[in-house]
Length: 273
Image 1 (cartoon, helix red, strand yellow):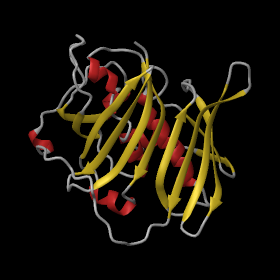
Image 2: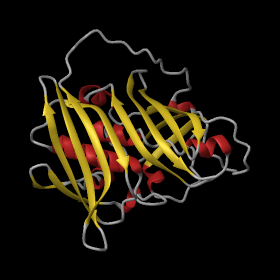
Image 3: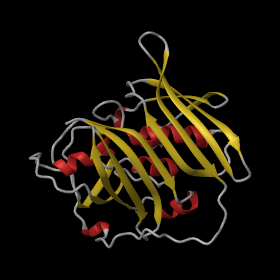
């Protein structure tokens, strides 16, 4: 059986201690370069494959320095400090420029941790929403390829069908999952954290150039809890807080169908008027 298209896209080949090679996937093509979520999942995969890994991801920050060009790339992942229960990582993704020099296009950092059982509670409750079966499928009006990799059922704040400048809110609430069934894991969750289209499009109902500059994902669930999700739905909620001087921020939460918070995420995005 062929690997899932997602697993093909984040596949890496170890070439040295903490060094890996990979290649962009046309299945996750965006307007410029690949879908940011698949890039985040790829650099996280480099950490997860490292033989020195301690625990599982607690946080992941990805900085997009430039758009990835179609083709091969190199990822490095190195633990810079290991404590009793946490481990700190630095990562970078480079590509060969036309000049023949290696150029850094992504920098990243991560914290992994050996989690232990403690008192726990979710202080951010899942909104009361219809079940996925009660929400009709929605075809996102977009020509980019990566959109086809996900099934999305918006409850509120769908991407506009009409770009008429009448937007009034940046909130989106939707059920989402892989279009071709795949059990949710940590890399898949990192990618889902970036599924939300630019908030400026929704707030203005005007299509303007926009791109993520930096995104951080906080993982509240580990592999065991994600295994319980399986191929099920994830509820995502995203909103912006401020649009100013060519940048806006976005905060989002992701819950499983049982209402458990799986991840929270924050990013800053560049946009033009």
